[in-house]
Each structure stands twice: as C-alpha cells, then as structure tokens.
Image (cartoon, rainbow, N blue to C red; front, side):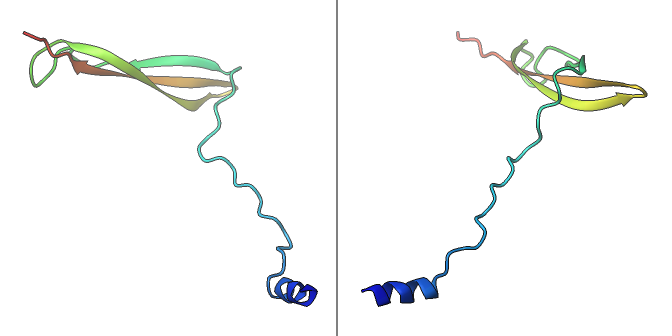
Length: 90
C-alpha cells in the first residue's frame, strides 16, 4: 500500500507555487476626497417621439471620469437620466 502511494505521488507532484489570486475585474472607485462636478444630460424633449406621451424618469446612470485642471483634480460626474413613456389604462 505504501509503495502504491509513493508511486502515485511521484507521478503527480504537488505544485511548487500555489496560484495567485486574480485581481478583481473593473476599475476601482475614484477617491472620495476629489471634488465632484455634476453634468446632467437631459433629453431635448420630455415627450415620447413614437407615441407623444410624457416621459417618466425610471433611473439615472452616473459615470465618473477623472478630469485634470492644471494643479487641480476633480471628478466629472456625467448623469444620464433614463426616461420612458407610461402607458395609460383606459
């Protein structure tokens, strides 16, 4: 039995270096101490181009991009509002 274990251990040696953890995908958040400047992107019209009904805000999507002004750092926050037409029950 001991000889069989030794034989198997010789054929399948243990890895010399364990696999390192992979870094988390995606970017890290920008530092909180940087000044934030909000830029709102709103539609030209608040009515649906297809049905003519008023659009309702369903969510906003915030994208932060690092911007540099010489000798000053701040974060530009682009806020994209998501709108939809609400169906009216009759």
